[in-house]
Image 1 (cartoon, rainbow, N blue to C red):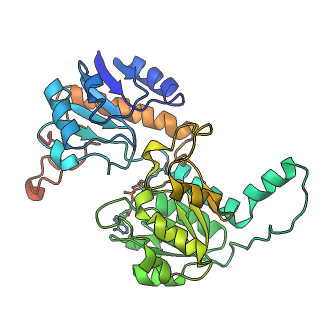
Image 2 (cartoon, rainbow, N blue to C red):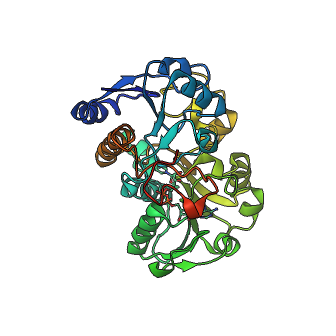
Image 3 (cartoon, helix red, strand yellow):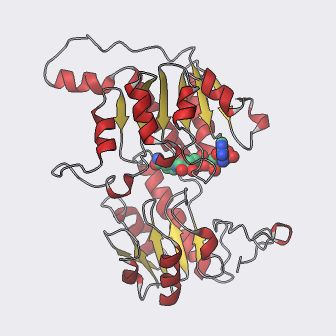
Length: 345
Ligand code: NAI
């Protein structure tokens, strides 16, 4: 039996993980707390930890896990910007779930966009109070508008296809363009200047942090709609608020927020909100916030649990090779052990 400390457990996680783990001799110790320097001790006695997007797996946490004999960090997410992967190299293996339902995220991005431009969030609240007035609900057609997609990986490509289905003009920016895709690639500057709608689907890295800042917003069209289902820190939220206040940004649809770690995923309805920036954004009539729920479909949850359990089993079985182990950028590309299907260390 492989024992796994499952941090930041939510009610929606348990059924799929209990079922998949039970079938493969993996036992999850569900912990409601997030993994950080104060809670890492709860992993003592476990072989692995299973973490999500807001667990802080920094160098100190990794050293403590290593000292406790924990040999695997199994991310149940695609993004891994919250794990110091370089520090983990040589100590604790790190695996993730590269794809579980890119459709879930791309469809949520479109759901947010439609909700925003057709004012569905306003209409829903009105009709619940038998207010059937249409004043202030005028939207605009997506058909014929230009959407700029930043990052055309699994999710960005599906989002682009959905947009094409709506008759939108799709342009894209990616560090590594998919040339055969038929997508029109442009520079980031041109994308910002031409897009009526901007949707972010690239990972959070040192190079993409605050890629949407005051300067970028300055270069955008007046009335631009910004959709972010990727990672909060891609956007400088202060600059976004200023852009909204200046009427430059027409609307923002945010499934992620830079400082979401202590707020999202929890019921804060009975609390005073300390984050004034988030409060101000939420108070805007043209801002829609969902709480990092783009991934949350039945299909995605089942795929996440299945892949995570497979990842864990692969790491502890036989040769320990797992296709979903992250690259630690060991600098040994030509002789990369992963390429040779061997363990990284
Ligand atoms: P992917 O790895 O398939 O695609 C990412 C794309 O971004 C690649 O084409 C890559 O070349 C491109 N890229 C990398 N650096 C870039 C840069 N500096 N500028 C422009 N493009 C760049 O990833 P996938 O599966 O499409 O996921 C995208 C992001 O969505 C993830 O990084 C994650 O942060 C986020 N995500 C959010 C979820 C949610 O529930 N809100 C759920 C799953 C993923």
